[in-house]
Image (cartoon, rainbow, N blue to C red; front, side, top):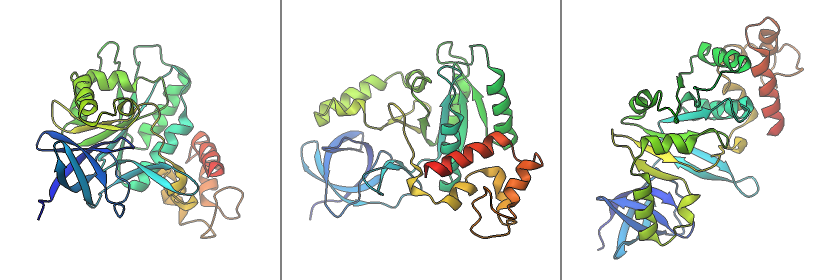
Amino acid sequence: MTELLTGLVISNLGKGVAVEFDQQIFLCQSLRKVATVAAGDKVKFTIVAKEQGRIEELLPRKTILERPNRGAKTRPVAANIDQVFVVFASEPFCDFLLIDQYLAICENRQITATLVYNKSDLSPADYIETELENYTNLGYPLLRVSATNNDGIKKLQTELAQKTSIFTGQSGVGKSSLSNALLPEKDLKTNTVSATTKHGRHTTTAATLYHLPEGGDLIDSPGVAIFGLAGISENQLAHGYREFQDYIDLCQFNDCKHDVDKGCAVREAVETGKITTARYQRFLKLREKM
């Protein structure tokens, strides 16, 4: 009987899956019965030829981040994540709606979320500082870094050590610059995956897991890693707003949408200043998107 090995998914390249075992990378195909795998997944696989394998089983996940797929379906972006680092900057325009979306997903998936203010060497905008104070008051950690000046990188390395993490955020905020600063041998690893899988073009767009020099893993997803709202309900979205949680059960109706509903404790908390109007308005926009 062929030996069943336990491997770590480095990247799902579409035409094949890069699986790491014993410091080697194998290009694997999956049995049809196996669900779609993502970077960070643990799998059971067999070696079928030199540097080639077959995924026989997907091992249980502790966490999963998904994006919308065709119809009402979702597709995994990354698995077994311990923490999400939401990267943003004053340039381009800071998208707090997107930040709130990521935080709501993390709250529902029980994944730690940390805010990373990149390009912090640029003059801070007052409106950004006001919003950041709201987030820190809610207990979200905030790191101020500059990939250009190498400011705060040591602190970021400490936060990443011994855990599996992913960077996310809108395009142009410097996620790639940060990952390059943290992973001096990133290109070497990418080239190794490309050489083994012969899918070099795919590795530039697929989420890829890298081992950090100080320990821990970083999943790098080029562009915007969209964690879709398709995987959560309207009620879960409300629970994803940390400051709503003390008020949701006080609403008059169990199916309260926290908008114009009679006896809404969340809206009352907004009116009395216990919940910020800006975050509440963004909640309504996200609910509309759903």
